[in-house]
Amino acid sequence: MKQRALITGVTGMVGSHMLDYLYMNTNWDIWGLLRWRSPTKNIKNHFKAINNKKRVFLVYADIRDPISTRHAIKTARPDFVFHLAAQSFPQTSFNSPLDTYQTNIQGTTNVLDALKEFSKNAMIHVCSSSEVFGRVSKNEIPIKEETKFHPASPYAISKIGTDLIGRFYAEAYGMNVMTTRMFTHTGPRRGDVFAEASFAKQIALAENNFIEKEISVGNLNSLRTIADVRDAVRAYYLLLTVKPKAGEYYNIGGKHTVKISRLLNDLIGLSKLKKQLKIVVDKERLRPIDADLQVPDTSKFSKHTGWKPEISYTQTLIDLLEYWRTMVKINGNLLKR
Image (cartoon, rainbow, N blue to C red):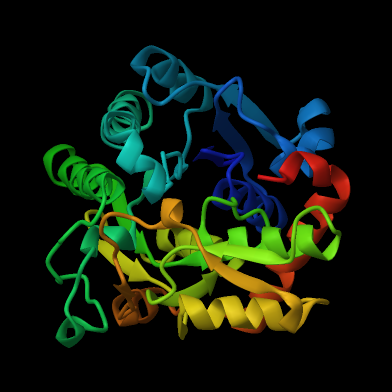
């Protein structure tokens, strides 16, 4: 009997790349959980497989709703679970903290409760976030798994809940739950609410004369370690298939550390406009407080699985910018915001 995987949040950047990876590298049947109103452009290349009912299946639910979540998991009955669905935008969480808590904390509880009932022996990945570490001091860099949590946003607080819930279900119910704190990861399909994708989008719009030759920015002093999303999903696959250890938690991240200001300059360097672009600080893009030192120690995960990043920082930026150039060519007028 074929093994079955479930990806929550399958239409998001990470979820869609997870679907791509599993489709190309396994023979599993793959179930994607999404809300009825979720845009599906990120998974449109799989529609033929979905329509022919071969290996990819969609199941509709909202993880905030335990009834629909329970029905979806009863239908999928997965052997492997990649729980990626979340309210994942830190800036948004300042304006919508309760929605963020409900989606990320209660939603994770709903997913794990349903799995406990219908797929208790599944290998389960719960995706937390490096944002749980929040504001760390320079002497705590690189950040280890044991570094204390100091959240800098409602999103980070919600991901602490996600993190702890995952370990609780492993310890209390004997479930095979493993938790990751993924540091900054980007690439094609990255949403424009994140800094580097917003820069790439604005560059593409300016190159095509949809906006003035200006790039609106927030905090450029934040230090980030950058990984490619395609390396991230490969790590998540290894998490559940290479000596999985229930209850464990891991930092995962890239090898290239830069200030956001340098990342912006590197993207501008790939542009056709280069020095023509003016940088303008937009106060609306500044968070009340920021997690500004996000540099991981990933040795625990690398030693356990053998994983290491394969896609270069430069290639990631090239692919991110090309993605947004394509989006602008398709819908330039609609993206002017």
